[in-house]
Image 1: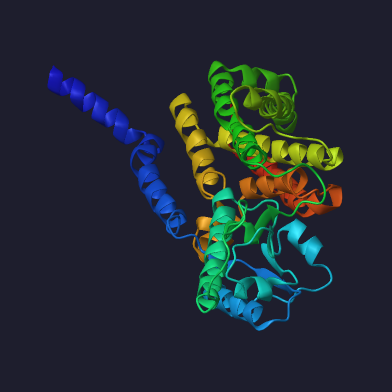
Image 2: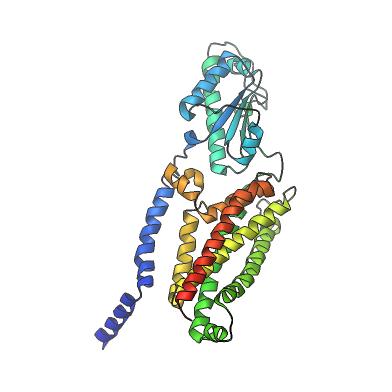
Amino acid sequence: MLFALIKKELLALVRDMHGLAVLFVMPMVFIVLMSLTLKDIYRPPLAELSYAVDVRDSGTPAKWLLQIWQRSHGAPQPLGTDWQQRLRSGTLKYVIVLEPGLSDELESAALSTRAYIQLLAEPGIDANLFNALRAELIGASGELKARLALAVPGTASPAPDASIQAMVQAERFATAGPRPTSVQQNVPAWLVFGMFFVVASLSSLFVQERGSGALGRLQSLGVSRSMLLASKALPYLGVNALQALLMLAAGIWFMPMIGGDALSLSGIHWGGLLLSLAAVSLAAVSLSLAVACLVKSHAQAATLGPMVNVLMAAAGGIMVPKFVMPGFMQRMVEISPMNWGLEALLTVLLRGGGVAEVLPQVGRLVAFAALMFLVAVFLFRRRAP
């Protein structure tokens, strides 16, 4: 009897191809995907970041410092008159400003009491990457200063506030919108992830109604398939809106209560924020409808939906920052709907962007939503409830 029962379970498992795929294929895909995305996490690719230099000191030591930096980071881009706009938008990752008097400071044996080097990073830069750039710039300038100061005899004792670190001032360049913080960066990522997670709930409910015959009875009353799908989508758009409201509220009020930074919405463009959230919600719900029309059972709905969501998050810059990925993975991330939503929210919450700045990402999300809705209609028509 035990052998027969075991055989029954194995036959049921073999017949469930979706379940087998989740058990065996998903872990393999996840291992490959995460291994590739985390390939460079312990050696952030600083040399691949685009940067420019504003040289305001014409002395030889300042030129030496610039040469040291270029050996590790390549040649800088032309500064141009629009460098502030490029820095705010993220197309330029950072700018190094060499202030007047830097050469004299490097040649002096005394420690610095003011900043002669500015590191201005784009608002959406990852905190670890930002700190690594600042530390490397401090190390390079400190090493050069030590070499040049060796020949200077009999220096006076340093001032109490003097240090090598004081020579470098680092900040995220945000002339508009709230001050960039870790919360300001993390809330958009997990907001996008949470909104896409409606796929599990919607697909399970869809399978339940199809199994109970509710969808068939509605169609017998003359309700079109497109109308049925639209009636599924609209309530979940409201669910996404409530999700967004709760997650933003948690960032604003709950995070300060537990010792974290508060999410700031002061100075942001509300039209850009609402448009971005609406586009993310449309993409998430349309994808959920397509998955719901694809699966055949509750087991498939409970596994396939979350699997798609997690894999999209891993490959979309949600779970793993884009900057630590190898080059080909970074290019692949740019075709992910989750990444489009993330970039749109970062543009509003960190870069001071408005409707015009988020339109490229919003357009992609709306096009993706339309495509997924058409796929859902096609699958629904092929499979009678």
